[in-house]
Structures are given as C-alpha cells and as structure tokens.
Image (cartoon, rainbow, N blue to C red; front, top):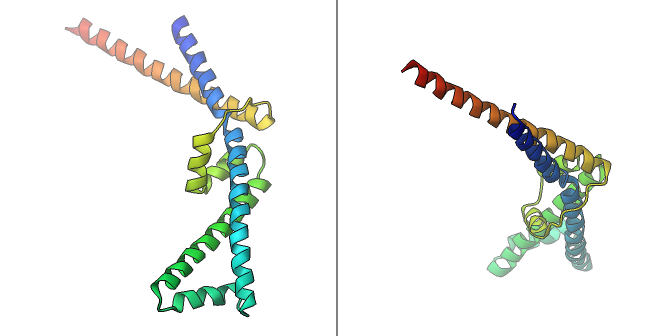
Length: 172
C-alpha cells in the first residue's frame, strides 16, 4: 500500500470513527425526546381514563362505547384515542428498553424499534456531541475500523482493476 493509499485509509477510518462515535449521543437525544412525548401523551391518556371513570367505565369500556357509536365523529374519535393510547404504551416500552440497555447497546436498541416521528425529529434537531463516554469511544473505534476497512477494500479493488488493464495491454 502506497503512502497516498495509507493516508486515504487513515482519513476514512477517522471519518468513520467520528460518525459512529455520535451513535450514543443520538440515542441519548432520542431518549430525551421520547421522554417529552411520553409526558405529553400521559396527560391525554390519564385525562381519558379519568373521564371514563367519572362515567363508571374503564378505559376499554370507554373505547368500546366510541367504537359502537353510530355517530361518525364519535367513532373516529375513538379510533384516534385508541391510536394515542397504543402509541403511548409503545413509547413507554421503548423508553424502558433504552433505559435498561447497556450504554454501548443503546444505538442498537433504538434502531431495532424506533418511533418514526420521534426518530425523524431527533435527526432533524441532532447536535453532535464530543464522545467522551466509554460508549462513544467504543462506537468511534468501530467506525474507525469500518471506515479503514472500506477504504482498504476499495483500494484493493482499484489496484486489481489497474493490474488487469496493464495485463490486457501487455497481451495485445
């Protein structure tokens, strides 16, 4: 490997390390955003539960009352409320999984079952952080090795292509 190829490989490794080292920071910002979403949904769900209880209904009975209504507005409102409750419970589950995962594993947990809206908004507002945590350093190392390997493999492919052309020219 020539000196230029080594420099390119090291730069690619550093770029990969820099990008991957942000994975734990992104997971942290996602977790903070999901906490805010849960707080807001909790207000809605608890209000719905309280109103149902005032009318001597549990949550499921109240949702069934909406579903059985012949009024399209009330029926649609019930579908919307059911969706809100499901999203609230899903986000609570994600928060629990993110909270109990090892710091190095949090990006995998997030990618395994991220909420599309929260993920997109986190990505839109993401602010990179300095990876001074152990997880940031591990992910940085993974990215460095990955970037180095990609650059090395691309360099190997380029060298083979050049050799093949030389051989074909010599044969003619």
